Structure formats: C-alpha cells, structure tokens
Amino acid sequence: MTDTQKILVVAVIVLGILISMTIPPSIGFYFGEKNQQNTSGKALDLKDTTPENKTIETVKEIMYNDNYQNEQNNTNIGKIYQKLENSVVQITSTVTETRSNIIINGNPLQQQASRLGSGFVYDTDGHIITNNHVVSGVDSVDVTLSNGDIFTAKVIGTDEYNDIAVLQLTDDYSNDPISPIPFVDSAQIKVGDPVIAIGNPFGLSNTMTTGIVSQIGRLLPNQESGFPIPNIIQTDAAINPGNSGGPLLDNNGNLIGMNTAIESKGGEFAGVGFAVPSNIIKKVVPILIEKGEYDHPWLGISGTTLTPKLAEKLNLPKNFRGSLINEVVKNGPAEKAGIKNALYTSDKKIASADIVISIDNNPVKRIDDIISYVSENKSVGDKVSLKIYRDGDIMDIDVVLAKRIATNK
Image (cartoon, rainbow, N blue to C red; front, side, top):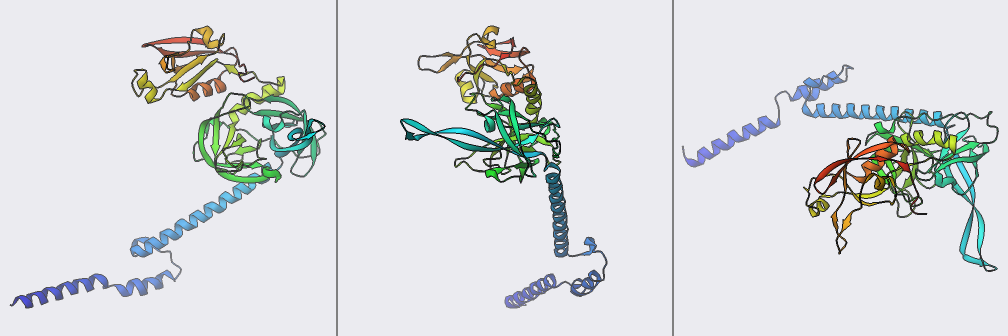
C-alpha cells in the first residue's frame, strides 16, 4: 500500500468518527419520541433528558422559584406597610432663620421657615420618637398622621449626642389609630439582612424604600456635639432629606434603627445611609421620658486606632492591637485613675503612650471598640477595667465613669 493510499484510509476513518459523534444513533428518540412524551402531560424526568434539556428545565425551575419568592417578598412588604401605616408620622417644625445676605435697617433679615422630618410611634401614651436635629431649637411641632390628621406635640426630651428626641402629643388623639412599632435586638442584625425604610423624603408622606444592611458598627461623626454616635447601622435603602427620624425595619416590620444621616456630596441619596440602632434608642428613650435628658458615661480620653505603621514606630510588633491614648481630659475620670497623656518628641512625633488593649476583658482593636462598649453597656458611676500597655508593661486600671462634658462648647 502506497503512502497516498494510507493517507486516504486514515482520512476516511476520521471522517466516519466525526459523523458518528455529530449525529447520535438515537436522534429520532431525542427529537421525536421524547418530545411526544413531554407533551403528554407527564412530568419530565431530568435523568433521561439531554444535557441541553436538563439545563433548560433547571433554568425554568430556578426562574419559577425566584419569581415565586419575589411575589412572596412583595406581598410581605406590602403587608408590613399596611401594618405600620399608622405608626410612622411626618413632623413639621417652624424655625426662625437669619438671612445674613439681606440687610434691612442695618439688621439681617429674619424669616420663618418650615423644617420637615419623620418620626414613629413609641407607645400608646402618645410618645413619638424622632431625631434631635429635626426638632432642635423649638418647643413644639406639628405631627401629621397617615390619614392626614394633624396634632400638636411638645418636645419633652432630647439627647443631642445620640441625635434622639422624644415628643408628646398634647391634643386628643383617642379617635385616631396609632400603633407603636415593636423593637428587636439590633446587635443581632448582620450585613446583607434586608431592611425597609419608611418616612417622608422631600415631604412626600409615607414613602417606603427597601435595601440591605451594608455594614454595622460604624462611628457617625456628630459635628453638633463633638462626639461620634457609636454602633451605627449603614444601609443602601434610599434615604433623603425628610427621612430623618423615620424607622429602619427588618423584613418582619420590627424596628432595628432610626434613619439619621446620609453620606452625600450633593445633599441627596448616594447609596449610603446611617441609622441609630434600636438598642441605643431602647436605652435612652425611657430616661428621656422620665428626666428630659440623658447623662452619657464618659472616660475623658481621646485616642486613635493603633495601626501597623504606628506600632512599628513605637517598636511594637506590627500585629500589636489596641487604641493609643493621645490625650486625657484634665481632672477627668481617666486622669484621676492614672492614665497618662502621650509623650511627643520635639518634631511632634509620638515617643510613648498608654495603649488600651482590653476593656472589661473585651479585646480592643480600635478606638471604636471603647466608645461602643461604654455607650451600650455602661452608665454614669459604673466602673470599667482597662488593660493598659505602657513602656513594655501591662497593667490593669479601673476607671469610674463620669457624666460626659461637652468639649466643643
């Protein structure tokens, strides 16, 4: 057999193999008989189908399940809205604004302006919860229910540090259905949990938006008070001006927080909103109702998180964790207990400092850990035990917490 003949033989064999792979012997079954079986009303057994049919049927099943789940979720959200329709209110306060750019008879123009916000019913005694910044500077506000009825409420308690205020309805509301919102433990929420926000953005009453918990345990700077608000919940649910003071809810309609602020360059929603957690509200509000104010426990320190670079400069291992104390307030609780200010070199670099590595045996990795722990777990007069690293030694220092003193006033 010549080489040419050998090549022809091999080519014929290869061609035969390719044809057999392309057209299966049971092609009639797959495209004829099997289709007839499927149209007969019998359930499709995926074990006996081609991979292509398996994929198609699986996709159909997934799409059906997803659509069913979405319908169920939409139904649940609708029921939550109906259940809480009489729990969320609009708050309108009238404030005097000074227009420094308009001068009349040598004095800046003063005019009345309306400030809009949201709130929610706390109990059946007519107490309404909202943000302090919604009602700051006024003694009474108008509260509008979902049915359009308007009542007068007086401000009976404020906590500027946590941006919480309590109102008391002063008009007779006995003929109106108001329903308190149930609280849940905000410490149990997780990143990714679905959330619902209800409020009055831009004065558009009873607006509902949805999203997820984007992050937890944030510190929210508070320029008014000078102290950050701890354990803030971050969400991507749409929150805009007018939502302040409205509830942030879980997917069962329970309160997990109060919408308070947004991160935005233009003043409108940019995908990042913040809510005061329900655990702080539960702790503060009863005292505001009783006393009108809330005394915050205070260590009297300012500090920063110990970063790897900072640890290296202090000749510590890069993985050393803690909160470095920059400064202690004179005659404050920390100074009285023996905690010291940081020492600086002539070029203003830290030479040595006290480093808090635990509080009541809870590890401290960031300054946030100290602020959050004291805020949620302690009261004025309580004692906390700090484990301090100082110049190679570790010591335990007990500090008796005092009432917080405003440092920016």
